[in-house]
Image (cartoon, rainbow, N blue to C red; front, side):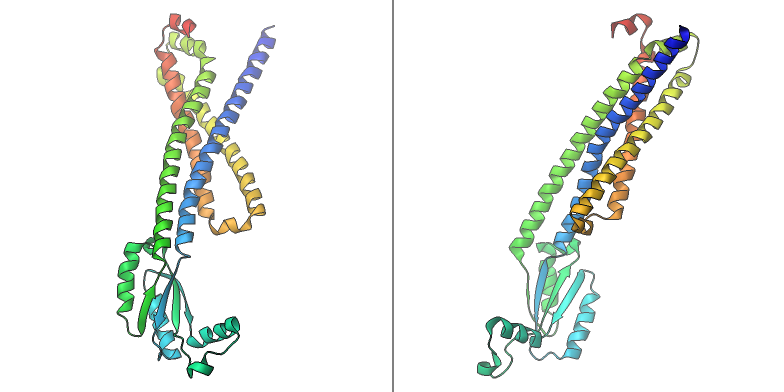
Length: 293
């Protein structure tokens, strides 16, 4: 009879642990999705900013050698991400294809100017930075004009700031919700063992001694839940890449590693803190109070 009761309690305990791990993992999946989205949004912002093109017209008499030297000097500047030199001959050829006529036949000479198209590093892709960059470049020899989509850059930066604020607020709210949900789950699992805690306290066990197995179990459960959440997130990411391979231009391995580490860390920290406070709550209670909750 006693063996049957012990077996039943063992099965119930094992079921509670599984339930706790699954419940915690579900919350960590949501938390991991937010961390992933926040980090990816930062990369997406940089990707968009670094694909905004600035146009610079050069002098008509610039030679190919001078143009190459000019581009080499420009590439060395800290705010340049990439650039492309377009000779006036290239512009002429493209115009011929587009119009179906040769402008030199009625102009007598090639009327187009050589130019440089370049993209900025993300930190400099804003109107304030572009203002002084434009002034600096305009002062260079053989530079006639610097043009950039001012309104578009303003709208991109404004949208990025709004999205970042919304994601940060969402992340903060989800952290609070995650803590509450996991805390309730942990508290329920410890609630079932409140009389064991009281019995250990009666026989003279110290609070630290009583807490130790619960904290150890919480760490193990947090790791298990974190691993389970990471497996689910990894599978979801695999199917996302299969469906849309271009997503890897924004999502880096660094983002994936940070997300996985954050999920594991949050799982361990939250379950450990919740276990610590829940055990302390029952340790402070008297025998009569344990029957009233």
